[in-house]
Image (tube, rainbow, N blue to C red):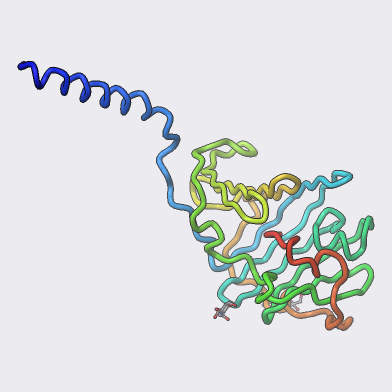
Length: 219
Ligand SMILES: *[C@@H]1O[C@H](CO)[C@@H](O)[C@H](O)[C@H]1NC(C)=O
Ligand SMILES: *[C@@H]1O[C@H](CO)[C@@H](O)[C@H](O)[C@H]1NC(C)=O
């Protein structure tokens, strides 16, 4: 090696060492985030923390092909919308998105109101809501190995999906976690009667966080 190339070789060697040193720190090989299926229904359990912590169960119906969705909660107290319309009340609550509007209703009180419109950010969760999400590798949740992504929104949202593509968990940082009961997951057609409004008059505007744009999240 001649006198000019020798220092070059040292530089190349240093560069190579730098590459080798850092490969281990790059994290998992990115995995493209999934689109949500056009249509599914699944039962879930949920934990939320505010001034108090609350757990509930429910069922979600997702019908993106018709721009509609429905989420039934056995107790809506821990939900940002339901829990601020009937504050501090343990009562069932349904969110229904149909015809470009999110409605909230309370079967035990026979009360229904208009939360806000799809244009104002209250439409269904988009099938591509994970677009651009950061892949965080694999992790076991509820005994099942999952792929995990992080999507920034009003807050950070974390999403876990089983290795065969079934949604398992959403964590809305810092205070709400929905876990889907994967054994109840089905992509069959949803009975259209579930998307009908109740007969209690749903035109009046909801109170609570529905009218606060900054409070809109993904559930
Ligand atoms: C669903 O809503 C989106 C946005 O509001 C709209 O662009 C789309 O055409 C709608 N699709 C159907 C099937 O109504
Ligand atoms: C849909 O649900 C309604 C009300 O529960 C029921 O009367 C009807 O038979 C159901 N339709 C189908 C196709 O399952």
